[in-house]
Image (cartoon, rainbow, N blue to C red; front, side):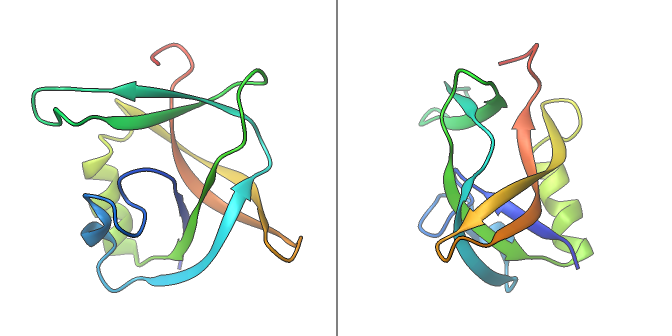
Length: 113
């Protein structure tokens, strides 16, 4: 089952956390790579949502990792409008105990912040 890193509205307490259904929370982490985070608003999402784009000038992200089903991955792909709006790539993250874990992450395309 895939592991997914969430950093915005999919985190615990976020507006869309319910999309993770009964998937298993693994741990809280920080990204090893830096990201520039853009806040995007639309008519459908007037409160907005974050879009993280890999950037050496950015900052690391805090978030959560979940073990998800293939069905949830398909749901998230649709929600995140993958691959049109977001890219889905594997990144490394650092757990509180210092160990490294790899997980999928939805991130913005560098040319479309």
